Amino acid sequence: MPREWVIDKYVGYEGLRLTECNIEQPGATEVRLKIEAFALNWGDNDLMNDRYSFSFSSLPARVGMEAAGIVEAVGSNVKGVTTGERYCTLPHFYDRSGASGETLIIDQAYITPAPSGLSAVEASSVWMQFMTAYFPIVELCKAGPEKNIFIPAGTSTAGWAAIQIAKLQDATVITTTRSQANVQYLYDAGADHVFVDEGGDIEQYLKEITHSVGIHGSFDPVGGNFMERYANAMAKGGMLILYGGLSGTYSHPPFLPMIQNSLWFHAYSLFNYVENTESCERGKAYVYEALKSGKLKPKVDKVFQMEEYIEAWKYLSSNRCSYGKVVVKTGL
Image (cartoon, rainbow, N blue to C red; front, side):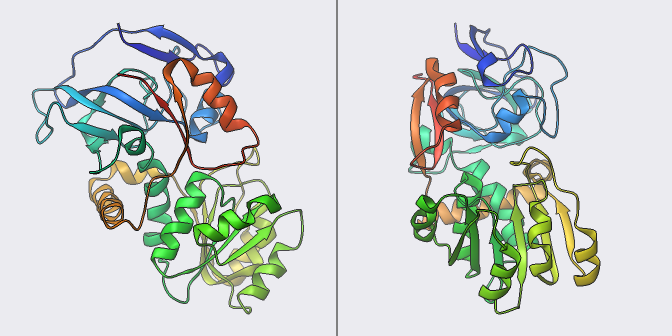
């Protein structure tokens, strides 16, 4: 029988358990995937601690938002999906049936053909990071020449992807890290400026390196009071985008700087864009083309086996010396 990792209560990844599961038949608009590999995301960890943007309706439940696998069966109303071919899941609001298993029932709306030329491990690692970055950087901030884009926490997979995409748009990219050891990695990723954040005056730094022009768009996963530290360095009409709470809490909009500089605040989740057919197609088209041309490439740090899922989480949570996606390979 296939296996799955589930949680029985909100205690984080230490509460995961490996168990057998049934092979189910897909509903009318669903497909069944034989999962080959699935990737870890920090949102999964937040979900396992019940501090994400949604909760499970009941437990036990599986987590996981992106995977790659072979289509085994399709529902009666599914069109354009070929059995025996490799597809990827797209991140979306789901309930209990995450991707951390060897078999998965999922609606056709939330799968897409695996990019050509990629292994299952690589294919499982692209959509969350690149699609998460595409909409804020390209469509909301409208990154381009003479635009200054601020990407805090650049060593995160979404941060790294955002640096890549902002540079594809010819924007000037400023990022942050908490360690001097990460600086060269971020320059190699394409950042134009790197601020080592040890509590210093980031507002003044941003004003100086932009020659007082300011930041046209920020892509902020930090939360807490971090946004308040740089809001006064935003350009007139700039876009403040919040998509996470790495600090442990989400930011409140910095209303006074917003009023003074006519700033926009956008609370962002990729899932809302995936649920909209038109925006989802735009995001997929951008990523497919960038992968095909070699302008974007998957970056996998380490691969674990199915039995090592908890070890994979321990590794992801450690002070790593390398960066990229952490992926679990099922062996199927």
